[in-house]
Length: 70
Image (cartoon, rainbow, N blue to C red; front, top):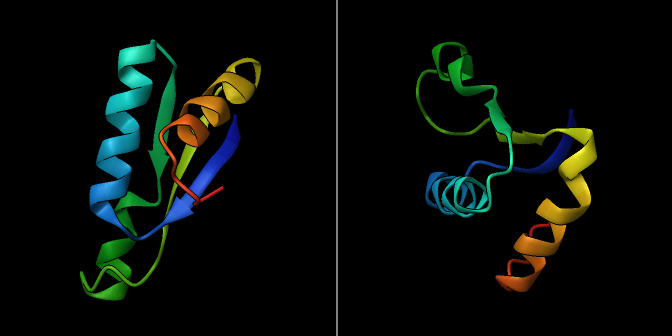
């Protein structure tokens, strides 16, 4: 798996997950449980990971959505 993006913006994560699901791209959000360590402040970013063979397509989808996180 490769990192598509890293952010602590939960709305952005949800939006990108929705786009990836619609496109049938396998992905996983990492570091969700880090909030236990940080005290649920949302300070530590979460990573959206995509299968290596789908990363180019995932990046194109994010770029076409005009998201500058990449």
